[in-house]
Length: 348
Image (cartoon, rainbow, N blue to C red; front, side, top):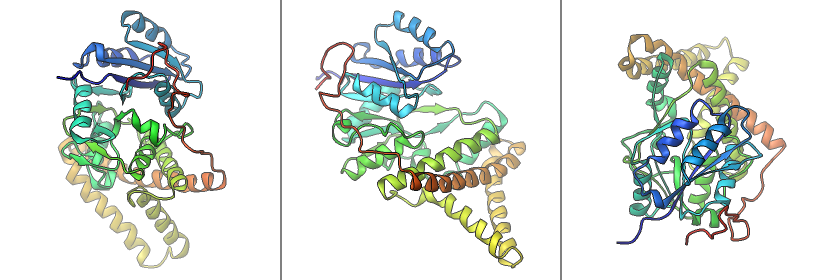
């Protein structure tokens, strides 16, 4: 029986003193063979106790290495890790997540059985507060996520993107590494390049990871505004989307604004807004009732927050990046760009 592939676990972080120790200890305790993995953490210049905690963890476990990410952006941090990695497989993991003990093993198993270039699991949300419970319910609805396959824990098969992801090293040697200037949407942008190059992305229901969503309307609106900007940037950079889904909130916001500006007193305007309110209200009852009656009005308010903030962000991104493109050709991982901390070559 051949040995399991050597794996690099890649974790960007910045000011995560409240989460970093528990997360790294969970990652280090994965059931994957300890001598077949390394944990590389790219710190973006933390000013809290994150580096102190990481230093202690690295002294306890020789598999843990901390590297600098001077650009602070997660995508840039991932590139620093990839340059210094030894793994045949590179698995991205986020600090704000809870992982099943077999998460890493299942990622590698999914890569092996599917033959995909990237494999991962669904983006499972986990709640601690009433607002988060309502948001989890909203994100289970097609009105919340537009039917995105990677949001459903029951889906399995080839998809356009997955949450986080486990990559074969050859991905970065062919289509290039992460876009270092991408503040959001960097995963989807990379996956789109993989698919455009003839590669495959696989979603496995056996890969289990939970994340904690935003805990207020304000934070949620900020998040989806940034998502919208990032997706507009991806559209302008690559010239297309794999589906129309990312642009739907923008089209809805443009249509609504057009109605208000051109025909606010025409019968179609109150009808259109009333139909939207009715549709989201009915859906809020359908998906929100299992979280409790008190969650239903919160879910109802979450839907327009998701749609409007994403749509406005998309519009802002089209303007910003249309006037000032800030991307270049992705850097290809080569022996010349590889800088391993051990002086050893990456595993073939």
